[in-house]
Image 1 (tube, rainbow, N blue to C red):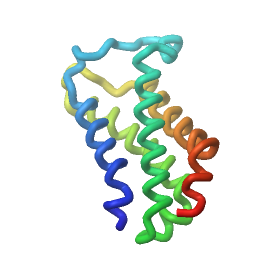
Image 2: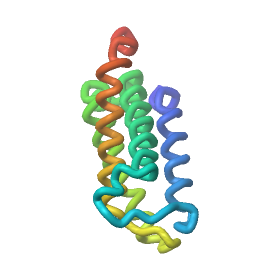
Image 3: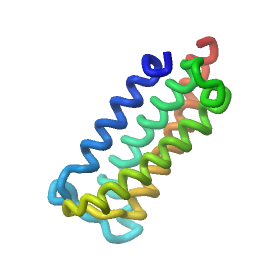
Image 4: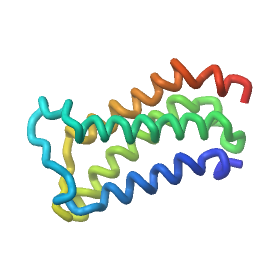
Length: 130
């Protein structure tokens, strides 16, 4: 039941991982805080907003792990932020022209928070009776 309800989140995590290991010359480099509002950062926010939405949805629908069920929002947010940090660390370790970026990590984390807010605003009513 856990896997079935979280397959979309797992698949999205794999997509994020694939994007993470692509060589750095595929993406523009960001060097200042003001570039946090650039297209690159908006992509980070969007990808992780979707990821946290999928995690929250999956944790809410599953019933195997009671901790995740009773703390589905906090768990989805926490897992999303940790995964966002891990993707940055993977980029640093692989040394494939990409590097750990605090700004990318911040954008990933903001995206997770945006996903939680979107869930609260629009999707919570849908999953209330699940």
